[in-house]
Image: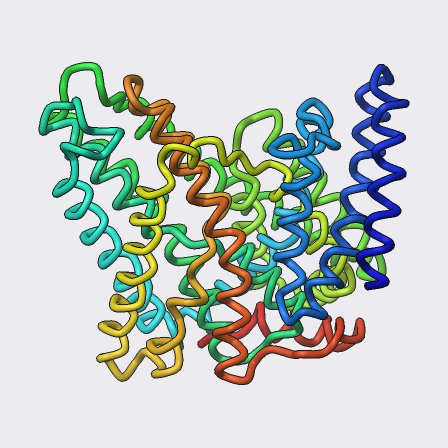
Length: 446
């Protein structure tokens, strides 16, 4: 009750300030909005945690409630200015995701990760594609389209069903103090799924182009996607090299250097269009493989910032939710979501037939892969440009689906990790424990 009372008081203050600052400079309003979002998210997170839910769920929900999608206490222009803050916190977590991709982890667990990722990608891809094709005459995006265009829509939705989000998975795991083989294995599989998604989408465009009607598929988007993926990896590697060199010279300033790194990634994302998650993950992989001591110090700094990073990441994601597309499409969205989740489960069960894949991941891993995030959203926006005729409707449905996965994902993830005994049920762990847990979760394998 004390959390609810505090949240109500904070909301009342923000309503007053919202009216008083309506004509003020947008920069000042954005700063106020950021502080309000952070405080409201923290209070809501603690409130839902007492109810047995992940804090991340509270962060997401309160972000949506106060954002432009509902009450508009945080206006669209304010949220637009906060995009760089969101990109910076994404870079913080993505750096840790990249740090998992060490040569040792790939040598020991690469085959198991690849098999599990293929099962979790191929099964949803086939199931969603086939079902959408079977209902294409009634599906809103394809009901008036020729067969070739129906196939293009079905293939695009099938590819999107195979994505995951290691950034959200890692943030939730750290927020709840989770660590163990399933946590680490899930992070590796989620990272592999996003790489597969980035590579598979251009291939789908190449397949769909000769089958679809003239002018309905723009192949330039495929080339753009591949080029920006390669550029993001290259730029991330260069940033990782520079970061490691500086960190070796001033190891006592690892925290400051990491803040500067996250800010640079955010600026690059805003000015060049590079995907911050990809850039930061590539940098993390470079540092973890070539400068492991520097990586441990940097990941320790990240562990100490676990709470503010998690709060800002999820509340800004929640504030950006736009669920208008579900007003008319919610039955179809439920169908697609159900198909994806069920087929992911059977994909991992298939992967578990090989002794390389641990039985626990085969059994509960599908719950940990429910979240989707930045890479899936980027692919949805690429689809909007790739399909000029119906891309807007496709992107709206896809983004609404991703928002739903982000809300349900932390709950499913916590449930799965609780089943295998890897989630901490207490409050936030001490800073030293967070640092050790982060280092273990980021540097290990399955």
